[in-house]
Amino acid sequence: MLQSKPAPTGKRRTRFAAAATSTALVAGVGGLVLAGAPAANAANVNLDKRFNYTCKVDAGALPLGNHVLGVRAQVQVPSVVNRNQTLPTRKTTITLTLPETLREATYDILRGRTAGGESKDAKVSLSAPGSSTLTVGIANLRAAQAAVPATAGAPWNIATVGDVPAIKVPATAHTRASFSMPAAFSIAATVINVDDVRIGVTLACKTAGSRVIGSVAINKNASKVAAKVSPKKIKAKKTKAKIAVTVSAGSPKASGKVTAKIGKKTVGKGTVKNGKATIKLKKFKKKGTYKIKVTYGGSAYAKGSTKTIKVKVRK
Image (cartoon, rainbow, N blue to C red; front, top):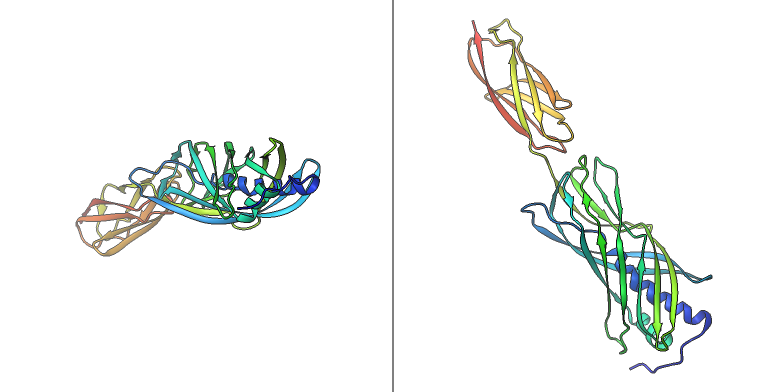
């Protein structure tokens, strides 16, 4: 058991308050990264990652230097989301375990008995190929005043809770969506000591390292192929026919490649732009009715699909 000592005064007293409360509150900011309901029938995955932030600490007008603070972010997220899907508002929580050095500094030197605070400028970012980074602010991010452990070596866990607003996956996003910690944020912290004295500290925190806690897959849209051959009358060895192809695949409009095959033989190819393509067919050598399979190969946004049409060739 640590022995109780008189509370320090002046610069020394405020420095310990800053160190203890700043570390406690970084957890809350880090925990706001991933929130939202999973896509229908999607399994959930657990993400777990550690980050370091450098925080400039000030007690009023007194600068207290920079402190490197760590946070472990753990969260459950859907393994798959859809483009245009809205991840609804929900609470998010993260827990930080503080080291014994900070527990001792806060309880035994500062004589702090509770610690808490809030951040009003923490944000969460969502980014994915094909779209701009989406950043939203977090509301009500705070850690309530909670007891500082009195026993040496006792675990000190501080949890924070915030409200993550609804986040809509951009319509043009594809492949995977990455969720990130904030690049920078500020904290207003308070420690209350045994004499009920409140010690206020501000922290300006930032990181230059990777901020991505994890990512989720983005579903491709289903596609549907429509195809029409022209002209109506096609003669063997004479007519150069073509197929007008339309690919419906939601937003954005389909792009990619289409091929036309009779059996295993490719008889034409085309490029899809804005959902449309034209396939020029080779001349038919013999009369008859042919089954042509038109295949859309898909894209970063859309799944592939096929359509089989019949073509009657006259002599």
